[in-house]
Image 1 (cartoon, rainbow, N blue to C red):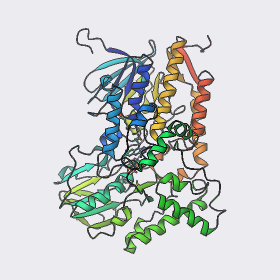
Image 2: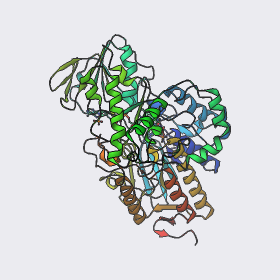
Image 3: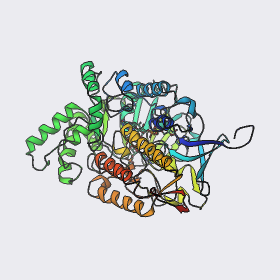
Image 4: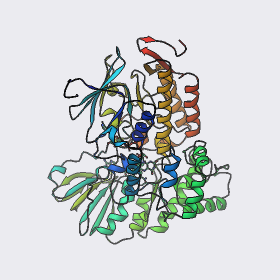
Length: 549
Ligand code: FAD
Ligand code: NAP
């Protein structure tokens, strides 16, 4: 409330979150002349790159791709020191963007949005924060992130643990020195795999507690090659455009033409070996055109990586445990690492199988599994996030018609294009469920959504329309389409966070759109060109009127 009037502060648009998506939304909506305000739970900008400060955290998309494209000056002037950006480097970059475009003045930091309520008579959302602030806006833009609600297993005894414990997604800003300590890392997804080699070099002893083995490929990180950078930057505008003509929003990889099953064994091995040496996950999955469609084809790539693991890890039992056997390669986020498998050849590293002998409890001096006690000075939870729906469901979002997001998504998320939700007018999401966000270069997807939303708001303003809402039929059809597309692939076969399998009790729904960035953008553009097909436009949702009226 403003102190003088006790009236809520009024804005045209409120943005929740100041990661790469929220920041671009501030910039883009401000250029429309809208009065915007962003609320951010953290003390700084950057989202993912602000929170995830664990050792070894870095991007698995190349720096020259994982960056904003909206300003050519920006993309030309920023120099990336390495092939893949480290977390500190990306955070420096995002802070540079915030300063260069003077975005901070619209952001209230250290402020968590707790409740958002829609008034259908005025078509206005009221936003309440944990600081007691109340603000209103016609439009809410949820830039709350897909991997922003860290989760750890609910083991008993953590409160009595005498050492320190950490979650990779909430890492202390001052860093952690594990020198001389006995450390346990629980979890072997991307965060675990990136941090394990570095923690192993510091710790007296490292125990890795693995429930499921994951596929990981060498990143082959290297200092940036200046001539490659110059050549890339010279082609930036065309490359950025070309990225939209690719499934994952990343240009530069020729689409494969051949099935793995049409190739001879020798040809396959040659292809996989070349990709293994080149480094990078998209490149590897692009070896053949059916690796994510045919289990038989996929098995040839999966087995190639298993052989690499066995050839790297000296202890045969450890190697066996590290070989993934419960999902086709690429159906969980394919991990990129630096010396992950090599780390298990160190004398101070022990891999513990908690699939067959689960963790029973945390003890004051470590943890106990079904058959052993481990003495630990520190525990690292690399156990991931309540992905894609967690951040939205943590906010009490409801309408005066009595509809809440918790009820609406009780059996899994339902959206139209991953941008809007039927029953929640004027509330937009950036890279929401059922959009390709997490299956793409995410800065590209954030930019695409923000641009689409900004164009939509301009369209509404030009026609004096104050309300937009996804139609129920359009949403149902989009959810159906998502499932159909996913079911044509191998993705749903994995117990991944894409289906919510990492969170006990979470409904099993395949959440990202895997029809590819090209098809998705085409659909979004067609919807807009057809006067926002599948959306109800009106001065209020009770009085629908079409844009033509
Ligand atoms: P986020 O960066 O998650 O930002 C959301 C922000 O919203 C956060 O700052 C959060 O504090 C804030 N917020 C949430 N709820 C509230 C609330 N109620 N009130 C106030 N503020 C709130 N993607 C790639 O494409 N390539 C990669 O290599 C890659 N690496 C990753 C590595 C890690 C460790 C993780 C966790 C993710 C990675 N991702 C990667 C995905 C990454 O999340 C996106 O690339 C991108 O940073 C998402 O930006 P965002 O703005 O959408 O969300
Ligand atoms: P994650 O992929 O969900 O991995 C979590 C790990 O913790 C898994 O090994 C999981 O085992 C384990 N785990 C979870 N709950 C457990 C329990 N109750 N008991 C035992 N083990 C448990 O999480 P993440 O590693 O943080 O990565 C999340 C996503 O963030 C990635 O997929 C990626 O998109 C992004 N990310 C990217 C990078 C990068 O390289 N740029 C780095 C980090 C994160 P199960 O497999 O058995 O569930």
